[in-house]
Length: 84
Image (cartoon, rainbow, N blue to C red):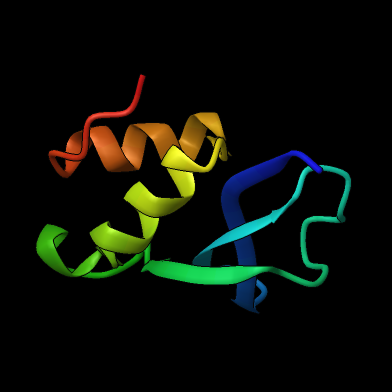
């Protein structure tokens, strides 16, 4: 089973927020997740409140072979978590 670290959408229309989750790569966007590793609020006022995540869990999943989506990779790299 190949796993991905990607965003799962929540919120109302035009007021989204996302959870950063680990899922099976074939699962739908808002389907069952294996683990929740963080949150992303793109509409937050301050940039330090936009992204929160558990760096230890993310590193564990990356070591196990999980591949981050392009958006999650950008979020992690912007917050000093190096992802290949």
